[in-house]
Image: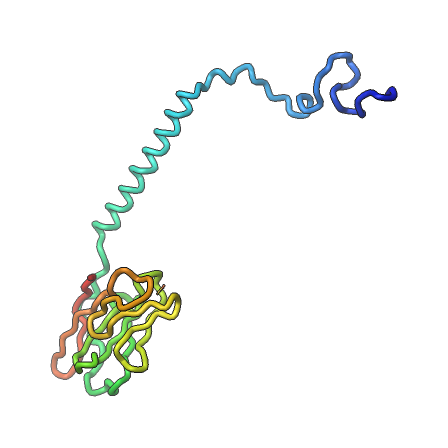
Length: 178
Ligand code: FES
């Protein structure tokens, strides 16, 4: 190499005399066919891809909505005599994966709710005063009497489990989504 010339490997390839840049030697990409995909075709491809994605999303949403929420049917939950004053009774409904809570409202009525917070699904618990179902994750709160949102980020009430008392046994009979 002569003084003042380019460092080895820059701007030349193999000393053949042709000024082939090193990047072209290392990445021998040929751009002479790039006209085969025009900008318009590329945009059309993007539109078709987006459209297919949107149709797929709508189809999945429709399928999910058609399938609906699981219906737990009628399930015996607990003997009313076994409920302790001021203490909630925890059970699973409508499926074995769904935590639920049975309580007496401050007015003395039996009420049951899904224990999954409607914000992001954390498990709610009964406040010490027995009037609120509190979510520890983001400080959400629901009324123990109605399941309505009292405070925090949840926007929907807790799903309410309908109850019937037959012969001293509390039965869950369905779920109402507010
Ligand atoms: S998950 Fe309950 S408030 Fe966020």
